Length: 315
Image (cartoon, rainbow, N blue to C red; front, top):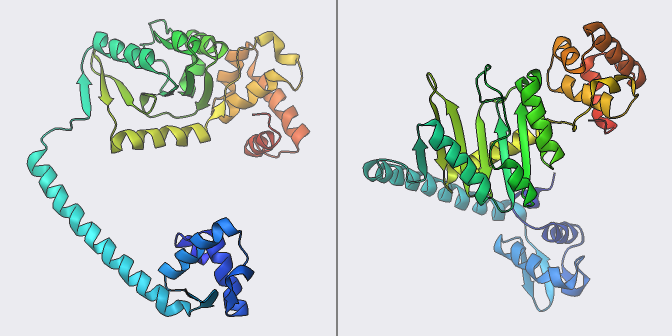
């Protein structure tokens, strides 16, 4: 445990206090710190009442009373913050009838226009969570308008797709076109919302309502936008990288891109039946390939297979 760092002190300040606690009073120049860090570290310790500095010497003080006072001060601050939050919440409820950072569009054309605008205005990065094909099963999935143009401009696009997209050949083909153009794609078994975030300036949530209705909510800079960004990054860390296009004829190519693709599908939660359909082979062939990988990696279960493959950098 690093008790002083946990309170916000620097590693240098903590090291100095431990040294003083062991050796007692010490000349300033004998302390274990670089000259450029020493002054700031001593100021941190003095502010907490853990040391005194006089005549070029530093003396340690007992920590219990000093930190007890610090704890009481922080407790009072926390109480004041809660009381202030309650007052501000009442003011907000009285005067803020609608959130100014939200904009809603309830038409397919309006939603498509907002999506294209976000992609066209992106300068650095677009992040996306994709449920799977937003289109209906009878519709042909296509690359969202503006995606390839954004990639061509040098905009980084990171997207996490729901595993459902891997079960529809046309949707998977559209995804591969984006990956080949430079998109970083990952897959996760269950994505709960369809979202785009452009340059941390705007997020777009897209929904399909009753009938043919397709609507969206745009979120401008706010605590909500920050929270949605955090949700994306959590999914990104958990998701499995999706390799670029690989032909089914490559199934016997050995432990290369094809087997990494197989491992990616397994990690994404696809069934043997779905994987077999993607590769154009039988479920028995898929099971045999998986069993062979388990033997190679010494994995007793498919879960262990995923762990071992990740450790080796195969996925």
